[in-house]
Image 1: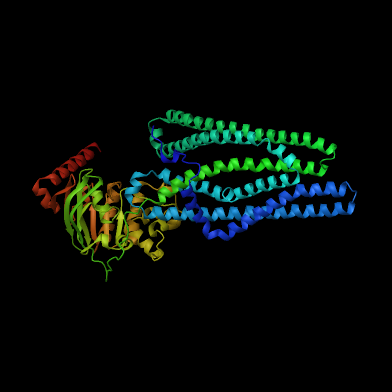
Image 2 (image 1 turned 135 degrees about the vertical axis):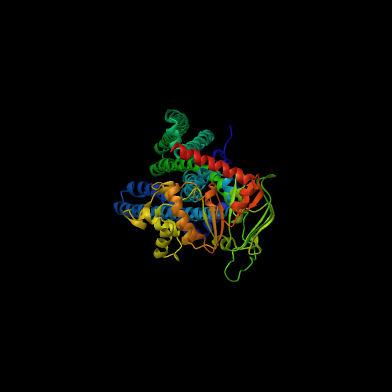
Length: 596
């Protein structure tokens, strides 16, 4: 069984990762110092409360001093108020700091994801990347808000209690500390077993997420092939195992905390047994005995808290390792240090010069591909599935870099151009159109404020998108559901044409752009395409040969190589690959017409 990286727990503590995590505290070091001072101050006031009770019993109650008792009660009240204020400052400051660090981390991760190349996304499932930005960052927020700073308060409290106990009476302190071996044993047992159950829970929650992502995305297939019962059964098995792993962890918690309470009660019993005898023998005051009992209760609380923080730290180490692995992924497609500056408007001349490319090492998709496209020229690219048509588009817009050779735009290697400036010259219309949640207008302009409402409406009218937009209640303000689910495939493609036209590109790229449009709609779009392609360099990958018959030049790809090139009529007269593709498609159309 393959274990994904999100299922691996990692070390409970890694100094290298911790040093790197602490750098995120640097911008908020003032807040951290305030929180740390509040924690220390709160711990001091917590330590003062039993001691004040000792003074009240031994000095004022025993002596019948009512005025002194009133003064000590007033001091106790101010201590309680001060402890409340300091606890509020600690909680508010740490939670606020944790939220700010979580914001910074998510922005850093998302910014890095935007710079990574398509090859990275080919290898990494979307669900795993979502986990990095959401769940893993949440875990680090818990560590910053509740663990890394507050643990100092627990340590300070433990040391402070031990110091006070020894200073008040070393004999009772020795008795109180006699249960420490039991505490150490049960704590080690708890940490060891909970660590294993925590690993199991993480493993199965990762599998739940993966299963849900896959089956919800493919729900249409599940329902079409009537796999609901099978899918339900598989999810039930995964969910049950996750539940059982959680229950195992609950058992350890259910044993640990009552055991700590019992050990604390045992310590209190020993203090009462021995301390009470010494009080009766007048070798110990009643106030000291009461203070010891209160300190003993406080002594075991930070031990329990630190055990819980161990799990928090362990989770943070695992999450931080996954986050930093993502952040350390190198950005392969970078802007050149000194990009070639362009003067004037781009002409749109494209040249592929002996281009080789492989997605995997030595498995070449393109082999020694060379061609030129003159400014304003329109070319079509055809070929069988897997011939390398879409790869040409990916390389042209530098989603990937060529393995060998070069691609030039107006005589300049595209690797020497500013990446953003290069892509700004293109508009791309894909077969699989991606619409974002929002309005129709926002999906056409994609946040480009320079595109006016009039330009949006004009672009839509040019490709006849207004025919289905106008009847909608909100018109161009109508809501677009996630992934454009409330529009047909054909309507989404028409909107992508409007988007391409609105950006007024120098180079237009069409990748199977009309494959999902019916014949009637295609005829309407062809009219709009003539407007869109006018004066622009155009590269069109086509499945339907009818869409490229009027192109200035057609390239025929076969197994990664250009085997034929020429106009539609020239290629037909050669009676080669293009002719066979045309004949096959023509026969399909005849058969379809006959069936109708």
